[in-house]
Length: 237
Image (tube, rainbow, N blue to C red; front, top):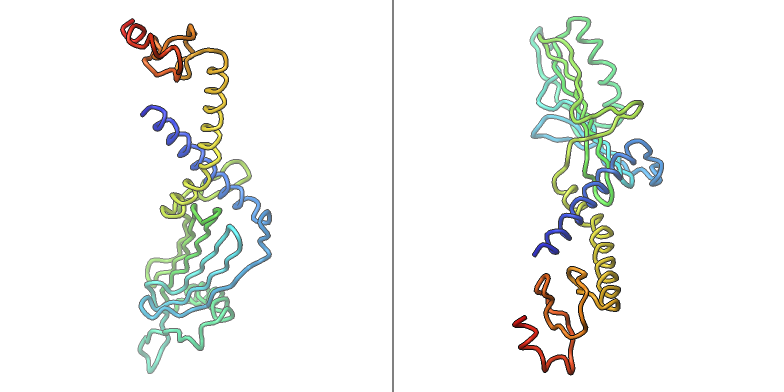
């Protein structure tokens, strides 16, 4: 039982450290996994949230940008503010860049405008497991604000620390294999060495060559043959 618990602990510790280490390394050096192989998904129109999102994916990295989430941009029609809702045919990269520049200027000029722009950065291998997000928000009456969630700074490096549950569990399970495998191999080699030296495999107690059960830890020694004739006496001892 203790051996199984120790094996599971080593697996989890090595897996978590490996998963977090890979994610942070890719955040600092995304070029290590050929970040130039970028796949662009979108932009796509989300009618439920009245917004447009676009995603860029490369091995070990993902950037998602969402505009107009939970918000509206107004234009004047006959003196009345009317929400501007983007349509799929109008939602392209140029449209997003244009509004990114236009909205702060509109707000500064006193035009009624409300907008959220979210950028989410995720890293990890073999799955994304740590992320950070940035929010730029303009409210019609509340001004402008920006904040970042899930980002830690270490000297000159800023890395994501917000966990993505499914990716972190998967990466821990996969990347913990070297740790548990190393423990199993070391345990096997130790057992072989102790058996050859005439010691108990479990506690290294020096055996006399006849004991079937180790008097120190109670583990069976695996001795067979003629020694079995003295088993009752040796067990009783």
